[in-house]
Amino acid sequence: MEQKSNQWQEKLYNKRYIFEIGAVLLLLAVPALGFSQYVIRILIMIGIYTMLALGFNILTGLTGLVSLGHAGFFAIGAYATAILMIKMQMNFFLAVFIAMIITGICGLLLGLPTLRLTGTYLSIVTLGFAEIVKMIIMNWDSMTNGTLGIRNIPKPTMFGEKLTLANNGMYYLMLLLLFLVTFTCITIHSSKIGRALKAIKANELASSMMGIYTARYKVLAFVISAVITGLAGGFYAALVSYIDHNSFTFDTSILILSIVILGGMGTIRGMFLGAAILISFPEVARPLMEWRFVVYGLILILMMRFRPQGLLGWRSTAKYRIPKDKEGKKRGGKHGIS
Image (tube, rainbow, N blue to C red; front, side, top):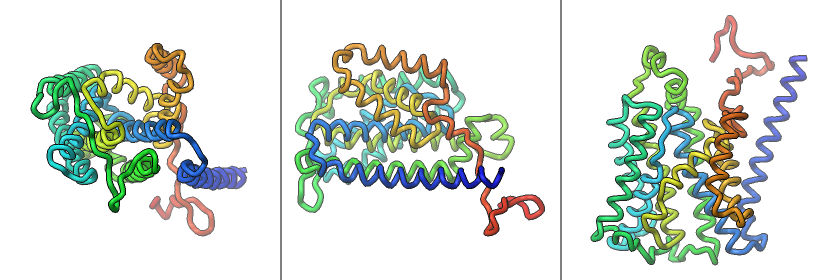
């Protein structure tokens, strides 16, 4: 019976990898399928919010720290990239790299004073951070152009070719950045850092007693989350070519939180699923456009009541699979667990 169960699990894992490879090939082939620029733009927005959700998931899904101010990091990444490209005449890739460093520093500065805060108090502080960023953007006219926003943000160029929606350059750049972010998050999940963050979420006191420097890892979670969010912000600025303070509101933070809760906190695939559902929903149900945040709220309430782990949240609590030796026997027992 156990052997049949193991065989079924192996088939399931093999099908999973086949599905993932097929999904990647399909995404690469999308421009060749004749879709309009409108559809391509929606797919790019899904990719951007997937990156935002993956960054947010490091902080909330792994570490258990709930932030309502990620729109602030999103804005910093976008404005830093736009300012460096326009005023400093930098290339997009150099500008967005510096923007990621800037947002990482802001994440460090926000993480340090909030080490002793959890739950509601942490959420209020992060919400205040986002409002401070918004006020700075609106009043620093010489740098951010105030409430008028920044216009004519240049498109990225690669090998002398400008990347646009028309030539599908922005779409493939989104796929590249999304792959890098996903690979980074997968690496973190399976690393010592990821295990420490999960332990802190489960029980911070027990983690500290086990020798985990919880303060260091919590600040690190803020920094990593901010860096990924800054990358998404920089790409968003290059995509839309115009940004202002209305592009980064409290609603943006709630949307990111909704994606993470819907997909399943602590998962990778859940971020893709949540972003695909919530970003495509307003386009599919345009008559409900004015009620979209009411719908998001209802989704959050229903998910927290009937499925608090999210659509794919069961994966974050799945049992660890003990590796097997060449004879198919589980390692452990008198030989120890490797």
